[in-house]
Amino acid sequence: MASRQIIATKSLLRSPAQATDFRQANMLSYRHAFHAGNHADVLKHFVLTELIAYLSQKETPFWYIDTHAGAGMYGLDIGYATKLAEHVDGIGRLWTRNDLPDALAAYVDLVREFNADGTLRAYPGSPCIAQRLLRSQDRLRLFELHTTDSRLLEDNFRALGTVAQRRTIIAAKDGYAGLRAVLPPLPRRGLVLIDPSFEDKADYSNVVAALKDALIRFATGTYMLWYPQLSRADSQRLPAALKAVPVKSWLHVSLSVSAPSEDGFGMRGSGLFILNPPWTLYESLRDVMPYLARVLGRDPDAGFVLEQKNS
Image (cartoon, rainbow, N blue to C red; front, top):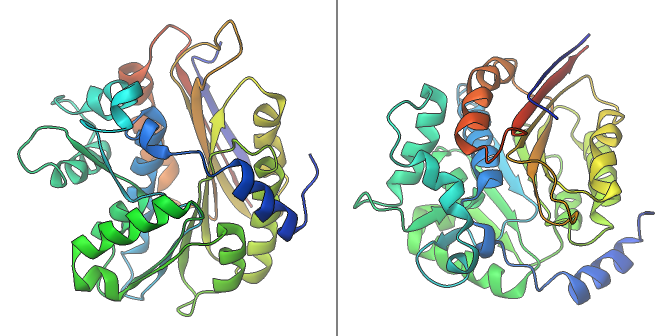
C-alpha cells in the first residue's frame, strides 16, 4: 500500500576499479565545506537525528555507516563556507526562531551544542552528529575518499576524545567498496547514510546498485540516500529508479526552496530516500515539512513531497 502527499510543487555503472579511478581523477575537487549548513543539510541532518533516535529506543547496539563522510565539522565564519554562505538560508534561518516544531527543535539544539556561546560559527556534518547521538554500545564506520577531508575527519574525531575514537573506524577509501566490506554489521542492526556529491554522473547509477547490493547483504538495515534536485535528467529520473529497488517499505521526502533557475544551473532543493524507515518517521515529517518549506522557501514555488510505501 502506498500513500503520497505533495504540497506547493509548481549512465551505465562502471566496474568498481573504473569507478574509483574516475572519482579519484574528477571528484576530489568537491568540498562540502562550501555548502555546509544549507537547506539540504537541514533536511538531511534533521531526518538523521530522527532515525538515530528511533534506533536508540532498543538497548541492542547498532552501527552507523557513512559512505561519504566528509570532514565531519565545518567552520561557517572562515574558509570555504564564507565563499557562498549557504548556511545563511539554511540553519541560519532556524537559529533564532522560537516557533520550531519539537522534532526540528531537537536538531537545532544539537547544532547549538557545537556553538556553546550561542553564535552560529560551526556546523557539524553527519559523522559528528551521529557521534554525539550514538550510545556507548554503538559504533561508527566512516568512509571518505577525499584525502584532505579524510585527514580533517580524523583530526576532528581526535579532538572529540578517546571515547569517540575508540568506537569509530575511519577509512580513506571509496565508500561504495567500504559499504560492501562491512555489511552485514556484527550486531545485525544498522543505519547507512549514502551521501555522494553527484558531481560524478556515475553516482546516479552507483547509488541504485549500492542499495540493491546492500539489501542482499543486510536486508533489515535502514538506508538513507540523499540526492540533489537539479535540472539534469539523471537527477529527475533518480526517484523513480529508487522506487523500483526491491524492498518492502520506503519513504521519500524532498524539499524544494525555489523554482528551477532559468539557466538550468544550481540546486533548487534536495531529497531523501529511506529504505526500511521507522513507522514513526512519516508522521514526524508530515508535521515538520510544511514548516521547513515556509521558513526555508525563497519563492512561491517552494514546497515539499512526502510519500511512502508499506507492504
